[in-house]
Amino acid sequence: MRMVTCSKLKKELEGLERPTYPGELGKKVFDSVSKEAWALWLKHMTMLINEYRLTPIEPKARTFLEEEMEKFFFGEGSETPKDFKPE
Image (cartoon, rainbow, N blue to C red):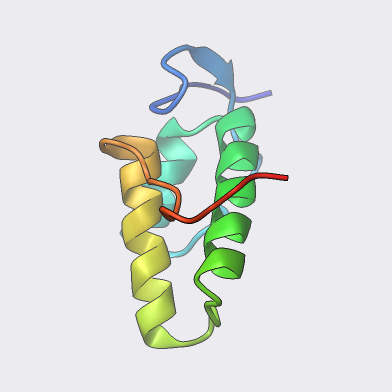
């Protein structure tokens, strides 16, 4: 088991088993994001895709999601859409 100091949850937790995203952002996530935080991101990303009706293969949508991922893990946090109402 690989441990990391999670940038999102601010404590030492089990790290990801393998890189989950390509490139420099993927390396940064692998090095400093826990499995628990990654699961939170997957839920948040799914909500963003659904609420904004994104198609993740489109370059503009990928750029948006990468920016939100960066904010979610390493910045001020990714916000929910203003009209979002959780079920």
